[in-house]
Amino acid sequence: MSAHTLAVVTAGLTTPSSTRLLADRLTEAVARRVPVEPHVVELRDHARDIADHLVTGFAPPALATELDAVAKADGLIAVTPIFNASYSGLFKSFFDVGEPTALRGKPVLVAATGGTPRHSLALDHAVRPLFAYLRAVVLPTGVYAASQDWGGEGAAELAERIDRAAGELADALAGRPTSAAPEQEFVPFDELLRRQGR
Image (cartoon, rainbow, N blue to C red; front, side):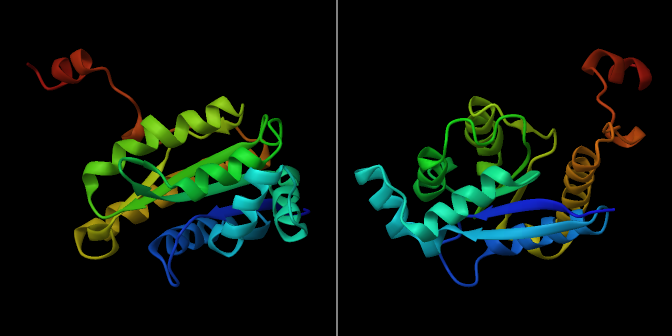
């Protein structure tokens, strides 16, 4: 079986960064399920080129290579830090300078990092709509990691979210339908009350 090409875009601003750590863990979890050839795009390394492209309309060679790799990949993992309840400017600018059709029909696993759990909704209110607008196939499970999720009880819950999201992307790459495990099945609120005898 040939390996699937997987673009991994990470917008962390420091080295090392929790954003890159989350991207790596997601990539490893996908690779345990299907053969992949990951191509990591560290946006921090291309910040000046992205700014130049926004102003001139032309991509310097290094940035053009990365945009091409994302466009040609079978799937995408996109991870951004959350600032002011939204994705980072660098993250948004990278996808702004790409071809408008580059992500059409491509399965995308969205993920984000932040200092507090309060910003977790940014995945659904900011990151997911961005890729939906670009006509990507945004996978059901997004992964948000707050500072407290890297240790203690939060670490187990983060590992579970990573595992579930990676399984969805692996299924999409392999052309398999994604099926929720029983404990992940959506249950309407009134049905939940009925089952609890209320």
